[in-house]
Image (cartoon, rainbow, N blue to C red; front, side):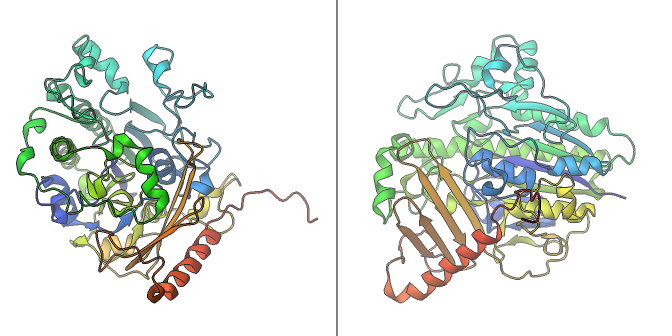
Length: 502
């Protein structure tokens, strides 16, 4: 019997923010249970630290350079084979609920009109679009929730039918509590039973209930939280006492160590200018958002068991990228390649999983997601190239299957994680960054400034001491630079069609 796949996705959540991982404050009992029964890969890294490129990697199995969605505001090329598309060709029912973000949310920079986007917020709100097309990036059907907190899509249409004008309660203006000194955070006035998280959970339950007997499925269940703005609804908005929360150990220490990064603090004032009181409120609301999602996941897993599907379903929980959440005196995401941004939760629970709990030894990558799913489904990764347009041809998928690690805890050969970041939002300060993370070290190269970072993560977990220019570490820097070069070559594009022999 084919295994089912239930993929829980959150937006902008750091790996540390799970009680399973030893966090002193945040409560995630249902995710902790999944991780305890399966494996939680504590050293998993995103392929890109912003939403759209990372989600395109989860969709295609390719690096950002390969799939071409280099930053937010791009669209994922529609000609590329996708994981749900290949699974559908093998008889899977493919469905997505919640956030997708495979096309832009609208006109996003310098006032220019973008090409048509199926996820354009203005067109949805104007009623020009009320449904994504069937077969959207391989999903036979979808139910969209776009945006963050002040969301749009099929959920908001349902919400207005339930309680007209209630969408305003998701916004800052409709908040029941808001401190003007913390502009990115408020407390949502909308009742919990009408919140988009709970709607996503109910729609996921409805999908599970209508499945035909023995109908294999791939279900993408994607929550917009805990992406900023930092805003939870009751009871989660009141669950955490901000005055008692543990602050990040390095929240007052910038430690940028290179001139270009330090100069960017003036470019990102909303990311860098906050005090302790503001940070405490941000933490309280973020943890509330996370616990709210955890509750919804518990509801869905209970339905999976009720429908007698649990014992044949591979469950994955992941985030597309992390969040600074105060570390290095930063919030949200930007050019600083700190662990809090690049490392993501990555929990796997398969029917045959050995109970492993947290695994903090193996370096993994979100590039490993697609090949692992294909391995569980018994599908040759080469089938991702059935239409001859695969961007990694003929080298295969850049990631690798984690199945033996997930199911049996079998150690895998060490392989570094590769992270790419290309951002022109703040032109002319274009950022091109490449990072390589091994079991002990992190090497980061900034192409524009020619500067770099080198950290010994075992002895300097808060990344305070940059060893880039330390003569004692020159041999390590050179070896890692060579390794980074080899990874970039291994994962380079190879998709130009040969016409003749010469």
